[in-house]
Length: 384
Image: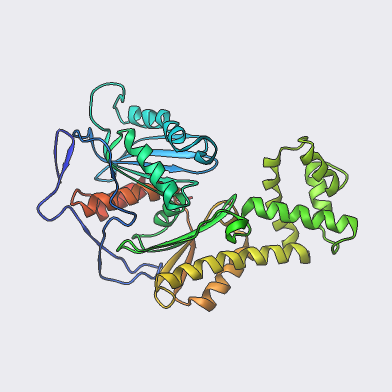
């Protein structure tokens, strides 16, 4: 690949649009796969030549945002981290504008001052954003992102796609994120996807850290007042928050003496009770495993991968804890429904997935971003 004033130019062979697909322990078949842009062609942003032939990768979750400036050769030039991404509360334009300080910080680390000169920072912006759950939300965010002029093109996808791409060698497989909430996506190299609305209970979702914590409270209070079976969770909840009873904890949350956000601390409490054999706790863990597996199996079926080797990437705080009861139950259900699927807990940070999707885009355009670039990128981010 050659450069002219920082602008990407294709090589004679197309810049690595074909990637070899390795037959590693992930069970992927051998051969080659032509990688198109798996999540759309993107919205045109700035039209001037870019300063860096590469990608601005954004992974914006509910609790934190990571940004990286990556060359087409896979070299990380600059990074930045900030708070959560909340377009559902402040609107798409304001949420995207809030990314500007992080982009400026990553650009500065890369040696570029966004306030000086003209032209976009990079060739392509690959942004995987929380709360981009519906196509209309993705469209609004993509338009807002393109308007910033950070790249010549820009693509927005739900942040679960970043998890998926971070945990796979090619844009192929299924990912289930179980963090504060729960979601699932599937992706094939030809651009086909499997998705769920993931709007919570109103769209059939159950679990995640927030949902599990509410279940722990529900069963604990009912155990204390006689409406439900006895469970060790009640005493464990009270002990964790230093209150006499679980009911007292609920009252403290209601009175805002205990922040609602602290309820997520009950997920390790749940796991500990399950490991000690508490029936209610074990049933909750088993139900969460069932929900994770159901999402993955439906996505695999939609992509015709039930009987094919495929990665099932697991991530988010609940799954990343690697709790044995939970993961063993997920693996058991997946083995029964999709025997060739290979579940794996992701170790790379999701911003790597956003960057890889960006490199996929460059490769599809014949602008680099091939297998060597992707290996270089992964090597920069050490595995957990």
